[in-house]
Amino acid sequence: MSVTMTMTPEAFAEWSRLCVKALGLARAEIDALNVFPVPDSDTGTNVYLTFIAGADGLSALGEDAPFPEMIKTYVDGLLTGAKGNSGVILSQLVRASFHELSNKPVVGAADVARSFHLATEAAYAAVGEPVEGTILSVARAAAAGAAQAVDSGKNARETFAAAADWARVALARTPEQMERLARAGVVDAGGRALVVVLNTTEHALTGRFPGDYFSAPQPLPVPIANDDLVPGGPSYEVMYLLDAEDDSIGPLRAALAPLGDSLVVVGSEGLWNVHVHVDDVGAAVEAGIEAGRPYRIAVTHFADQIDAKAPARTGRVVFAATTGEGLTGLCQEAGARALEFTRADPISVSTMIEALREANAAEIIVLPNNSRYIGLFEAAAKETRAEGMRIAVIPTSAQVQGLAALAVHDAAKSFDEDVVAMSSAAAHAQHGAITIATEPGMTMVGPCEPGDVLGVVAGDFAYVGQSAADVAIEVLDRIVSPGAEMVTLVVGQGAEEGLTDHLIAHLHQTRPDIDTVVYDGGQENYPLFIAVE
Image (cartoon, rainbow, N blue to C red; front, side, top):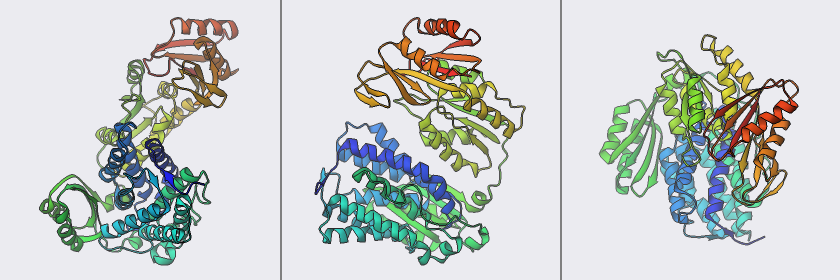
């Protein structure tokens, strides 16, 4: 095994995506652990959204940018997109850990240990009153584990693995350090989020899955009254970004500290993220004005968040994520509000949250219509449900599943009945597609070369061929069941002329009992979508 590790732009970009995926899978679990500092069950969602902000910034920059610029863009994205107490602290941990690594393509064990040390120091310095049994304790243990590994002569990967292992042990011990966690029977939620990131990184570096990669070894949380968990704490969470000189941050912390608790100020080089729990919102904002220019000010009233008291909202709205002018029009004709996307211009979580809020509806049904967007919409829904909306995210992974769901949408039904009917229609819509390979690769059914036609069934590559018509027929025959009644063909950009005529003729010969409908979807990258109902 190599003594050092090589950092590349491609590996860094892939790591950012892996972190988002892992935090998305752990989001609900971490939310359930959240009892400190406020039991608002949002730590997992906040950290997930924080890392999405970093990955989105990196995606917009592109992987051809210089490596130091990639790292700065990513950590700035984490900082400006950080949500909640743990999201802010994690953004600082990542920011500080990469501070000296951006210009070191080759990283040794000592570099790994120093990055953990710098990250831990920065996190403790950022928190107004550090509390043990939290993410800070887990970070400090990771730094200690890395230092010991270096002293023992371990290489870079082994040093990181040791840090992650010490962090997992520290997480399991957090209930011993904080009575509130012990009473609830849980480990610290922020610490668990940090362990998820370390587990993901260890897996990326070594290829091994740590023992608790998928879940933390702790009992499920038990119900505890909110009044018992937040005895007389501040009523509001205040967060804002701040443009300010570095030497103004000390006075800012001194001004904010007496106002409440959970004070965290992170950042550097004139850009800061401020988080504090207070009763006097105006005083917290005024302190920021004294220090520099606060903006993107967000205020959350904990009582409203925990009790989820609904504002005056009425009606039901359906949102559909769409790609292609034709598909967008079809969804709009069916009564949905379209959120359009392309590969170059994806839908951001902030756009999702803004759309849900601006709908001003009491009931919202969301059709992501893309596997990438399911978790993101669920996070956006989690963020906004506390404002009084009933939101159901139907896990549609394909555009044609969304069309099937919209076909049975009925606003006259109750919300639950409508969601059940749409979910059932989407689930029973068998779907496939064809696309064209743009580079050499390996699929589940063998290698492919640029120009090959790839047949997709339920999101997985199932066929590789040379003829679009032949591959489309293979996909169609695979998903047509004996009980099939209708086939929907959605034509996209680059489709061969006569492709749908060829498929319809094939169906007339093999299944004359099936009706066929053809739409011009205009979607990119996929010349044909197929749905069978």
